[in-house]
Amino acid sequence: MDSFFLYKLLWWTVIIIWIVPPVRQYKTHYFLFFLLIAVSDPINLATRIFFKVDLAGFIYPFMTGLMVLSLIDKLVIKRNKLTVVLYLLIIISISYFFRKPIIYASIIVFNELIIIFIVLKDFIVNFVNDKIVSLFLLMLIFYLSTALLKMFNFLIGFADATAFFYITSFFQILFGLFFTVFREDNPKIVIQF
Image (cartoon, rainbow, N blue to C red; front, side, top):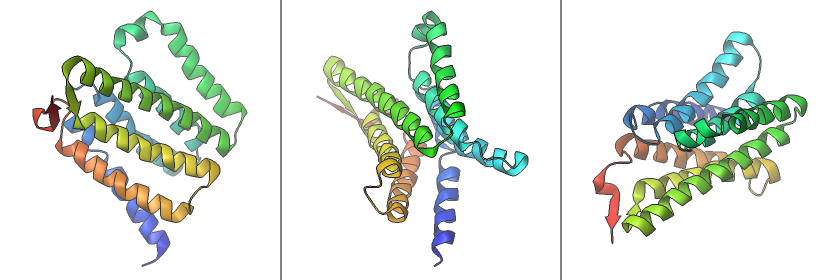
């Protein structure tokens, strides 16, 4: 099988699989987060097809910035509107003025680290306060870790890029299927202590 064909097949499969989780997660705390994941690649693809321009360096850093905000309590965002606007403006400005893939990837890594921290905090709070282990949050942490590793590999190249893309894409498909089947509020994926 041609490696380019396999690359495209995995890429399209990931896009198609990740369209469904936001539908499944509707009205949960993570709905907007999954919606942003689902629309990131299609928005990038649409700009390439319709406008014949590659805006990935703006789209993905901005979308990961929105993902961070999607996980923050709405009241906190309302109280800190100026900070939120500045945060997004800084992402856009850095992406615009320093048009280098390493800069885009660094912004994405920074945002993904914040996202992992927020989800990990939720996981720990659930465990400490309610004495539960949420397999949903655990799977989300693993998914986010694969996305983060993919970006780190882009930045520092610790593994063969092609092989690493195939492996992480395969796992991202599995994670997408998990989030398509299970909702955050599903009691079957909670371990009570």
